[in-house]
Image (cartoon, rainbow over all chains, first blue to last red; front, side, top):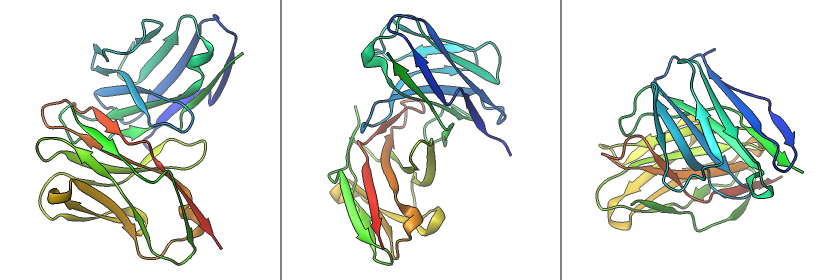
Length: 114
Length: 114
């Protein structure tokens, strides 16, 4: 089945220690998104890639970076995690960037910062 | 910019009872409207979506939603709830001309009692 895969499902890191979260997709979609979802809150878009074009949300902290080496993979790098970065990180894809395209979500990576 | 309000943080219904989850949006024109469901520790799954046309849309798992322009609402309904429907439900809004970005409501947690 075509899907969005996130690894690892659970990640523990130390305060200030860089961490990378991984997302891969077998849908061959052009667009990949990263969302942050804190406990009991709505998912919040951090950034997205349309092919290789990176689009950062205005309020996404500089501490968060992303890489997309090819169509299938996208990475979220947190350069110096703080306690406030503990959250579920959701990766999603869509075939096109036009409004109304369904976004397909992965299961998420739950990040704990000690 | 668009926004979404889900007035109910928690709802508890008995198994077999009907369900209605409320969603109100703010946007100057007709937005794209979505309902997603998230089971604990999982990503989001699309239940249904509305773009235009018939204001009553059918989704998966027996869910339906009705778009009411006059009330800026897109409420989710199910005639008979099953214990497996216990999850968190998110309403989301996308805007034409805004790419494929989604703005999510804060979510409603559904509990089903037997």
